[in-house]
Length: 376
Ligand SMILES: NC(=O)c1ccc[n+]([C@@H]2O[C@H](COP(=O)([O-])OP(=O)(O)OC[C@H]3O[C@@H](n4cnc5c(N)ncnc54)[C@H](O)[C@@H]3O)[C@@H](O)[C@H]2O)c1
Image (cartoon, rainbow, N blue to C red; front, side, top):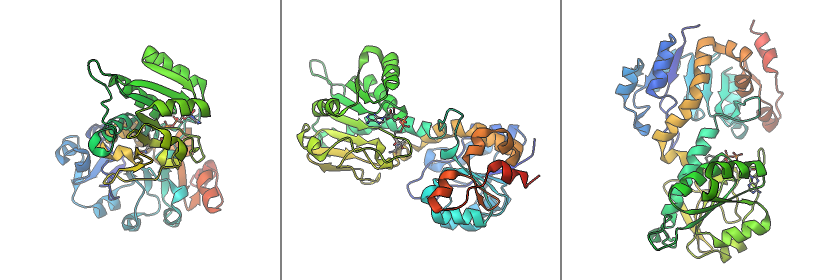
């Protein structure tokens, strides 16, 4: 086991209020013999005070520069921004959400600076699942019902329907497209709030799973054009959390369908970060999250978990910590033994090691084992 210096800088991206570690994560790293540096105020956006990090054994540093200089492993939430590029250097291990296929400049900086960069979103288990994306879908799905209920309020342009209804008054009808991680989480919250809920998917196994966990509290419906239309026309609130991996979200909802919906109905397009599920969807931001099209209130924020940073930080670090510990304990040797981490490696020693990133910029893709071999 190595003694690694692990650094957690404060996030500087606009509207990013999460932090890459919790105090219990610091305690775990310290118990493994590592030194943990946390930038002062890094947890403030997630309501985690500096004192909690200090009590867990972290050293608090007043600014980013000395932290990046001393750290051998940097844990972050978002990709480095240009102000952070000067801190990158050969041999530094960077573990964060990178989304490099959409970031050519950063990709070239990481190559030039010979950073060992691992993307949360590319850590992949043997069954193809992406364990570090799942918790944010869970948060976004649950939040979708909360914001959907708010959109239905009259002062937001909604039809003034309370999800739970009242004694002697019917509850709202909530229709969820996509019974994946976000969809089933939305479903559980909607049922919990007392709404009438139906959920549609093209995958019978996902419908069976939803039926098994929620039984008679939800109606499961096969997703096809006719069923989508029938359900959406009856809905007070529609949530879309459809995903076709590796592709743009299919446009399942036409403008004409929105025109025929109940006036003042609400639509939360969780899938907006992959292009959105409706002809009428366009990305919005937290400080101006809704707009009205064809009489329907639309909420299309692309980074929904950012409004609940405390919960999102804990949900994210619950799943990143075991990988961070492995990187801290074994350095790049962790890549030799852990296939999920190896799949998550994007750049190393000036070479791209992820096929998606290489394809995005027409760069050669090196085999991770081969790159590691040159380091023996
Ligand atoms: N806006 C945000 O802040 C935010 C946050 C997290 C995730 N997301 C997005 O939410 C979406 C869902 O993520 P997830 O993790 O739940 O994905 P997932 O893969 O777990 O679920 C997607 C589901 O969509 C279903 N589907 C595919 N085509 C369909 C169709 N025609 N009709 C009905 N269902 C269909 C799939 O069978 C699958 O069950 C993704 O686009 C993800 O990027 C957005």
